[in-house]
Image (cartoon, rainbow, N blue to C red; front, side, top):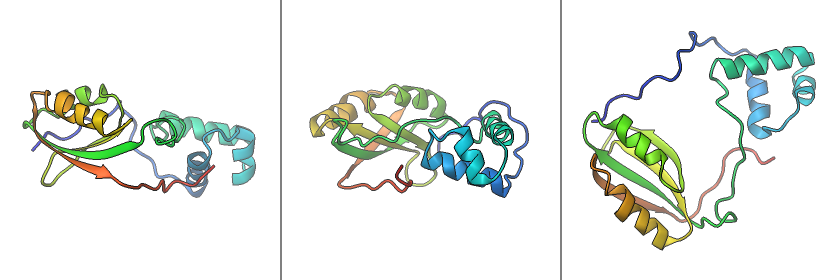
Length: 161
């Protein structure tokens, strides 16, 4: 089995989130472009309070960043697949760095069970997926085996903006 994931930046001991923090997170997950003013109004705090809370959530690593949710098919990546990998014991960090460099890789997870890594990729077509698996993934020395699960249909569970 692969080694456990390394810890991120040295962050202070996590503090429990209160109801306002959870509401702020829900708003920002729904609309990462929401203004401080809008967030403050919706959670019934001052703008300064909302600003301070959001910065604290960022500083504490609760909010890891802001981004766009992409419709991969409309962006020219109509083929998606989950790929399971078995890797050499204690090679997680090395493999993770190589997986991050793969075109179309959108999620990487170290997991327990019958395989070690779960990778989600989006490619333009099946030919590009085949090339990614057979040429790029299987060429990583620490990758012992792969299994590809083609995604037929997917649904984003995050609320629409």
